[in-house]
Length: 346
Image 1 (tube, rainbow, N blue to C red):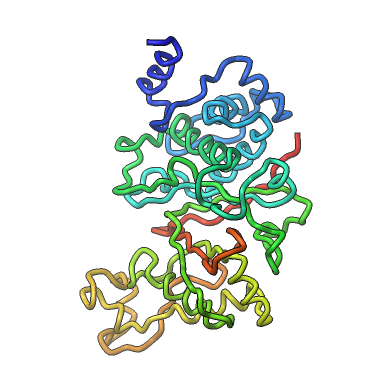
Image 2 (image 1 turned 180 degrees about the vertical axis):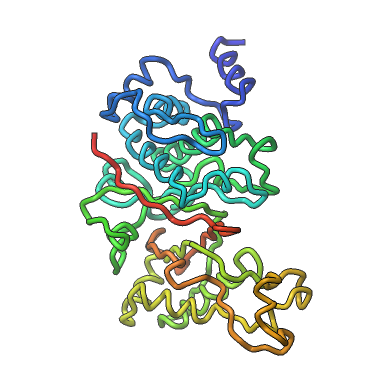
């Protein structure tokens, strides 16, 4: 057996891989990654839950090399690690839950084009080194520094393929609205990464609609079944509008705030349809149900999402084909929130 194969087997044996071969983090490769970061290797970026391993710049660089990142990708990985370790993201819960979320990265700003991050056709799929390896590096940090090993700490019943890598760019050039980053207080000249604890994407097909209400009614129908058709008070979720759907909506004069309000108002069901055991086992939790003296007949509307701002809107995907996508977030207990960080220039 060639020596290189033996080296790869050692990575598998020590549990520092995601199940795919990794690039050996030689001293030369890690030094190149550190140089590209423009930071000291000993600098502590975060302590990574749930094991609270110390994510120094050097350790992040090691995992980025293993994932196949080019050196210039490392600043993005560093910013993403800082974001997922923000308490608002709740990486401890994301890593240990029996649900399926994993960090989804959304990259905005000049660095997206500079690094060749895909934001167009096939945005959630393979074929782009930056998307594949930046997302994979974040996952390797979660495993190797955070201890989120499948079946040991990470107890997801199903998980999903995004746990190998989950990274997209926003197609800002074709978006009729301000980007996700600009909406959250950054400038168009800032390079940023947003992280969302996310399930797998669900494609929404609507070839016929030619008005904003019609397109959004289709999208609302798909949002209604996130987690469960009777789930309520859900948190941050990504609505990825394909460029053609986005243009149809914008041509009717709708901005993002109006889109969110429309979807939020449409995604409400009366209490009587949310009683546990009626048309499905789950429904409103007991502490909420107690507020209604006669829940079986009460028509008070209950929202699917806590507030309109929980619906995060980006434009991405190919310019041909009238499709959009929904990426459900993770919101049990306190819930995980979308977190953004500016990417530091070396």
